[in-house]
Image (cartoon, rainbow, N blue to C red; front, side):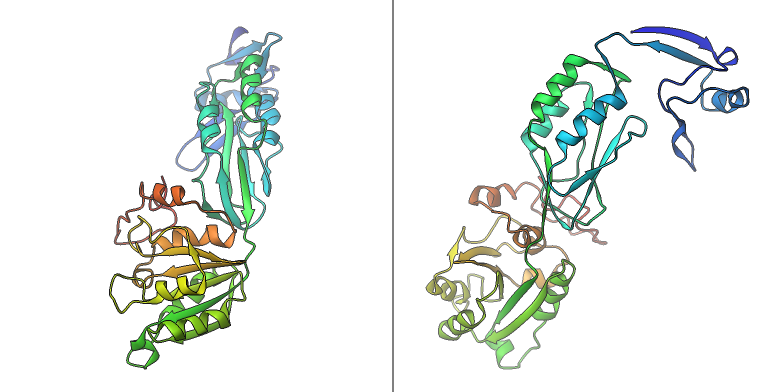
Length: 338
């Protein structure tokens, strides 16, 4: 690429080859856009943003401008339920969710793409719950121009989309609360209100609820009555206490658990299982006490009917210990994110 350096005072009539950025306490963005023809009145403003010279760039045949690079790759990176800006700004194209759902990213290929020294494709965390219109990622190349062979390399990595959103497919759930002390009226149940409120944030309504004592037969009866839903949440009776028989009762009903408990704290005893077409989530008391727990991490995946493997549950150990901050800002925090 050939570069011709021109003093700003002699640049009137020249075309700007890329966005000129202005940054101060009130503004950060493209102050002069690519293609702008410099006028005499622009000279002082350009000097204020440090432009005492401009460079007239004459690219070679295999040089790809940052805008063209981004426009070529963006449709390949974006998968289902993701929109992207059609025109780059400062060489960047942003990606947003077209639906409420679960964000998925191919981490292996994401790292491979970003291992190319010229490329930058940061995203939010994998398995993050997102809302329609939320920004998910941004792509650009770091230099103004890159060689065609670099674009070819990136295109090869992006043969299938790197990012997708899985919309939530569950809109109804049932809840069973177990505990003799609640059933007998010694203490007031708080699980139903808490879980109903959490589900409502995801557009899920609760159809039926039941409260049972710590009795295998009665838990089984409640299960058989309320299982006709895609999601059944069962709370209480999940610890190591011999009186806690909820998990045993669910197993006798035929529920197949992925594994017993999980490595996330709080809510180590949260356990996920399946019975025919119903997802069963056994939620411990920790999910009631803490603002963020294993239940909050796992729930978006359940609502999107995203398959969760035993290996993935083990991987939640990295980042699975809550920081117990005085002011909780979950989910915009490291909890539950590897």
